[in-house]
Structure formats: C-alpha cells, structure tokens
Length: 521
Image: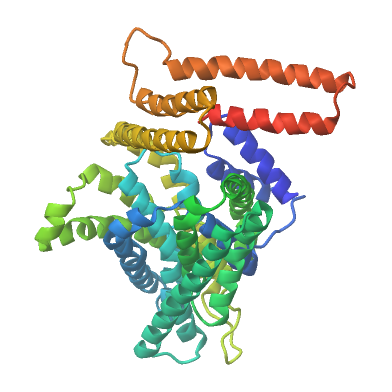
C-alpha cells in the first residue's frame, strides 16, 4: 500500500510539475498524524542493502568518467574533506549542548550520521535544475562517494560508543580497509561484468545482470569489511564507461528498466521519510523539552553552516596555493559556489544509519543518546529537504548563473555528426562499389538519410532563416508523426475486423514505435 500510494502521489506531483520528492515527504508527514495509519519504522537493512545499491549503481552508470576524473580534487574535498569536517563540527556542537549526557563517541556518531548529503535526494532534486555541467558533476560525484566516507566514520565512532575499544590507528586502519576492499571489489566485478555485457547479445540476460550486480557488489564488499558504496559506484562507473560498446537492445531496455526502478524506489524512500515521525517521537525518553529543542536547532544550523563555511575555502584555497590550478581552471563565481553550498540535502541514508544504532552497549547497558541521534537525524533530513529543496530552484533563478553549454553542446554535436555522416557515406560507397554495383537507388536513399541526420544536428544550433517557424527536420518529424498515427489507426482497424492477427499488430506496432522514438530525439 505504501508503494502504491507513493507512486500515485508522485504521479500527481509530476502531472502538476511539482517536486515529487518534497511532495512525498510532506504527504508522509501528514499521513503520520492519521490514527488509522500503522507505525512504519524504517528498517536500515532494507535501505542499505535493498534500496541504496540499485540507486547508486544507476546513478553511477549515468555519470561521466572523464568529467569525474577531471574534477577529482573538488569531488574529494567534498566527499571526504567536508564529511569529516561536518562530523567534527556537529560532534563538538552536540557535546557542548548536551555534555556528558551524550558523550564524545555518541556525539561523533551523530556527526557522522548527518554529515553526508544523500545521493537519492541530490539526484532527484538536482536533475531538473539548470546548473553548469561541471557543477552537476561535482554534486553527483560528491553524492556518490560521500556515503562511503560517512558510513566508514560512523562505524569507527560506533566502535568507541558501544565500548569495543578504539584507537586512532585502529580507526585509520578500518578506513583504509573499507576503501581498499570496496574499490577492489568494484573493480573486479566491474571488469567481469563489462566483459560479459560487451560480448552477450541477449538483452534480457544483460538487463538481469544490471539488476543483480549492484546487490552482489554491495554484499560482497560488506562481507569482507569493505565499503559497499564504493564497490557499487566503482563497478557502475566502469560498466557505464563500456555502455557504448554494448548491444543496442541492452541500452534501450536497460535504460527503461533502470529508470522505472529508480522511480519506484525513490518514491518509496521519500514516502518513508515522512512516515518516521511517530517512531521518532516514541523513541524519546523523558528529557527536557528546552534542551532537546536547543540540541535539534544547534545541530541543524551546524549542518547547514558547516557546508557553507567549508565550500569557499575548499574552492578558492587550492587556487591561491597552486598556480597550475589557476591557469588550468576558470575561477568559479561566488554565486555558483553559494548555490553548491546550499545543495546539501540529507535523506534516507542518514535515517537508516540512525536506526541502525544498537539499543545497548557491549556490556549490556543502554546506549545513551540513541533517541537524540534519531531525533536530530530526522529533523536534519526534513529541514534540508524542505528548506533547501524548496528554495534551491529560487536561488538559482535569483543569482542568474551564466549558462551557455547548450549552444556549445549543439555545435560539438553538429561537428561530430558531420564527421560521422561523412565516414558512414564513405563506407557505404566502398561496400556498394565492391559488392553491390547495381544498387544505386538504395545507396542514394542511405546517403540521404545520413546527410539528413547531420543536417538535423546543425539545425539544433538555431534556424538560419529567422522568419521560418520550423526547420526542415522539425517539419519532417511533425508530418511523419501524423503519418504514423494514420498507419496505426489502419492496423488497429484491420485487427478489430479480424483481417490481421494480434501478433501481426504487435510486430508492426513495435516497428512504428521505434520509428516514433527516433523522431522524439
């Protein structure tokens, strides 16, 4: 019922062009006050092992290896440096407010829990925002990798909190082990998966591999005390790099399946977030309302301000130190850095980590402060999702970021399309001269088709004649869609009157659908 309701709400939100993640969170909050709605407590294992791997993997497939490699420094400063900085800042603030009642280990656990912006939230909210590509690459890379840092720091702090013994060197060793094992597992599975996917020609089997591989990578890495997040992301980036060499049916079906999986899981996740209010309130022990309120407000402000404070030095500091960076990279505007500093939405991973805290320490005593960690995590997730998620589009419009990549992309595509068409025509003529000397009509039609694709790419730069309302390619697509509609009508009528079988209709329908999909490019 939760999945059905979440999908229905998301469908309405998308119909009215509303941000469906935020609508789902608000709807979940509203439903949590309805007495008939059961208390649904988030299961951390379902999130970390069942929801997170496919979402991370699909996001990794769509990421650009070249862009990530070119921006590895800012991505690392955010996904590692900012996570550690936020963990310490929030830990110090929480300890100053609550003192020994919370304790340093639990305070740092709280810092690790709320430190990473969520990959699901960032992707779902930022995908429709008009940001420069480099900024989207940095945000995407941060959201893919910061969970690995945060969950590893969380494990280290949790060891100290439950009384299992802890030392700095032990913590460094755990961190190195998590990173090394996670990357190694991802590399091995990514290479093996790519090898099979590039050599198979059965799209159903290949799509099944897409669905199964992230779960296998995450579970295998966690089994050997590595970072499952890094394993999934590494494998996804490697396989995404090889996607252009795979069978076309795999790409077409795989993109449809993964998009549907993302949609269902994202709607489920955001719906779950809002429904956690009753379980969070019921977990609270008898505490001073004033002190709890002060803690929640202080932690939320610390999370928001830590990102802002970190962002500007981390962006401009390397430029001040390194002349090479100044010469190689254009200086980002303060407006853009401000937008990125405000794009730190937390999400379901934060809640899952909070719920995963054990109830007791190793000696059997209750883990003091678990209820506070859960409450602060819930409030931080709500505050960042609703406050930042609702105001980020307004902020982007307000600062009026320079954005000219569409024209540059269109020019680069047109130039590449011209070269591709020329190479295709040359190959066509070689085959025709050697093997098909009497095929002039077919060769002429194929040459025209290749030249039309190249011309369509140039037309996307803008109409040459300002008085023309449609380019030739746009006119062609409009007229061809009308023709396809009439062809479908005839085939359906023939099926309804019994002149052709349903199997014939389905076969023809697929051909017409593929052609229309080409027109919608």
